[in-house]
Image 1 (tube, rainbow, N blue to C red):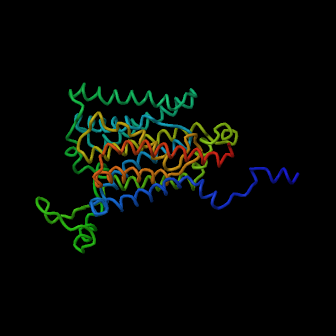
Image 2 (cartoon, helix red, strand yellow; image 1 turned 45 degrees about the horizontal axis):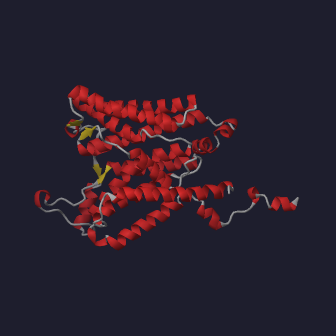
Length: 370
């Protein structure tokens, strides 16, 4: 009897090293250290780590981070959303249609856009849980539907697929400022005067600091990561997310509202995509039908790098955020290092393959598979 108990994998104590190795954030932590070490060695004098350079790769990382948070929670719940990229383009175009073409107050245009996009997310989730179809197929269909609407609507109304004038229409709008403004300007001015960061610009912007504030895009990214992490690790709903993705049927027997959890996660993913879209159109002042292309895959890759299993039930918002940080640093770092920017896609493919191999090994460690 004792021999049988000693051979039972379920009751064997796990070493501290093994526990560390199966932490979902491990891949993101190792990848972040490796990436920063590489660019500190090969691009330190390029301006990548001065105030403007840090702001550049932080902004790009924040873009990935916003959509990675939604994709992470949805993947932990056991589902995928391939319509994220099209949702970004669609949301941006709806803001332009409502706020510029129809001349609605920008805050109304933003709120209505959020409502429409979240409704699409709820529809995705409802179809998945009611039909049992793979979310890959359902959201792939939504990808084409939304992209089609994003092209058709502006062509029909304005005979073009790029609509500008958003920045002018949003001027002075209270809600638009929550997505397009910058914060901390006086702090950066003081830091510049104190010589703690890059000095002031010359020419047409003489006297202004090189970095005049932190974009709200970064604030949204940090806020979503914090909220997502707290919900996932400190609330009962977070436990439900893990349960829904780990073993949905067993979770139902335990009283977990699996269908509601999955639909909510689809809605949250749509919310994150819309936040990204609003920040983007406020920054550029225009909406284009080609915005958001391939963003869904970049979000999934960031989540996988961050340690989430493709099978669901395992992952970390912090890990996904680190995966997004790696993306931003590498994308901008290649430019600063003078490397051909097209190699960024090569990097994505290689890092995805390595992450999947690592995650497969971790899954086998957790489940005891051979």
